[in-house]
Length: 124
Image 1 (cartoon, rainbow, N blue to C red):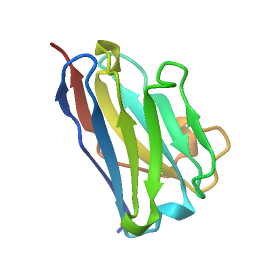
Image 2 (image 1 turned 30 degrees about the horizontal axis):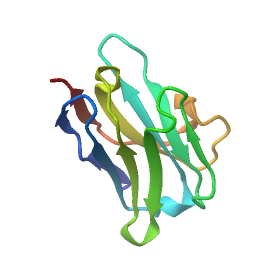
Image 3 (image 1 turned 90 degrees about the vertical axis):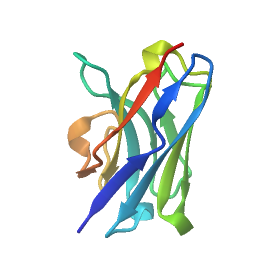
Image 4 (image 1 turned 135 degrees about the horizontal axis):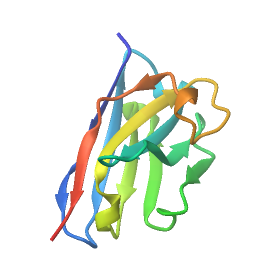
């Protein structure tokens, strides 16, 4: 069974950091581009970051550039999203997703598999 599982979410104060993990079972993540998306209440799901299958190319939304870093560890079959200098507007449920034939990294329909999400809350 192909499955993605996110972890690492939680409550953090503004300016703090979290590292999200996206672990795969049933398939090799390094054969897929992996995207991180987030969805806040009442808002559409938006692309945050993406890493291609080789790990050589990364993409970031303008709102997180310079604060978030995406990386992958093929040995652990896991992709990470390091989030620094968190702001209240970063609060959302964060999802990872896998795409075998990615065309536009921010397009939800380009992704074949999705995790269940992990909650990130940024509040003092």
